[in-house]
Image (cartoon, rainbow over all chains, first blue to last red; front, side, top):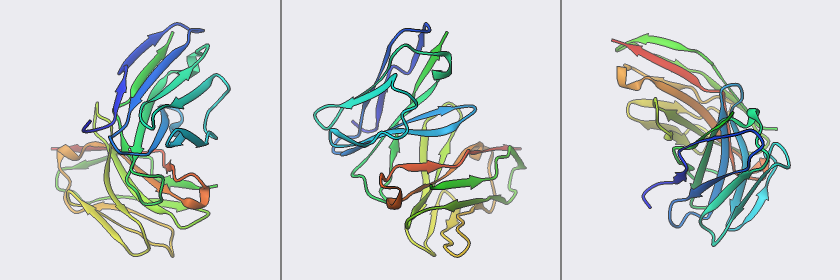
Length: 115
Length: 114
């Protein structure tokens, strides 16, 4: 596609439920990133993929968070047993490759509200 | 670890005023530097970037120069417009961090009034 596509754009879920957020990167981009944007914390890095492998998972806040990428394309971020502090905008981004200086392109985000 | 510090604002300017948003960084390697902009209700967009010392990135009248000696990448625009109202994020990408992901500053909200 023309840009990074994320779904759903908005999700309201009850505390304790699991949620899945999907990201479709720009065609041909081998690197894919997940970030979280919240009022108190700014933009936080969660995880990045090079192809289907995740060399850096250092930003995942707890073991309730996981992500996978298949076929070198679509990625899913899963949050299990959601908590209210998980409410945030989850941003996906992609770049041609994981190299310093490459432009990273962002999707419009998935706004998650946990009630 | 790597970090980016930028003035947090909010910044309110009149149309046609001069804009400076300060940004300084610390990095373990030799980073590339970026400014991203987020317009109301929209996603993050790259505004400009610079990949080596003394490079100047420019776009839409905005400029920023990579200053290695002062570890800075200040954003400037000579004459702002109402349409420039947005949140601006300074960021770096650093191979020394081992992952090439972006480290962001906290963002500066700019409001331009007619």
